[in-house]
Image 1 (cartoon, rainbow, N blue to C red):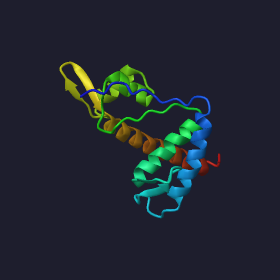
Image 2: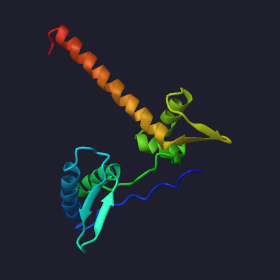
Image 3: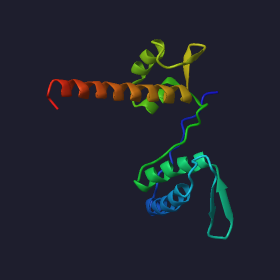
Image 4: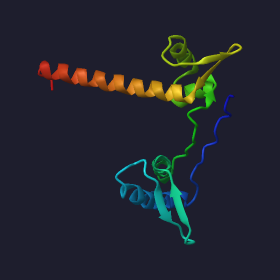
Length: 151
């Protein structure tokens, strides 16, 4: 099933300040745990009790951080099936470039009729691999620079 483009949540008015305050509280709650998978527990204003999975709390920290900075956010499930345009937008590349990545086997996809569909998880796997390759290349260049006495 192809996912409709997610509607970003943009902070308006005092939302950024509220996000900053919530971020501080949530960070304190998460930082008090040694195991990031451990549920995070908090008491809310009306005296109620809130318990959320550790990974959800980590995700909320990232969301609140972006909103505190005035940026909009959107959440895309890992099993979301994206069109090539949605996938290209997520990677911040052109659609033709994404299609070349797909056709070269660097990113998994499937065809539905004549249309290509990409799982969000496949895009994130590609991004992780690309970041590792970039770091390795930078380390190699740094080592070469040191050998040549340039650094």
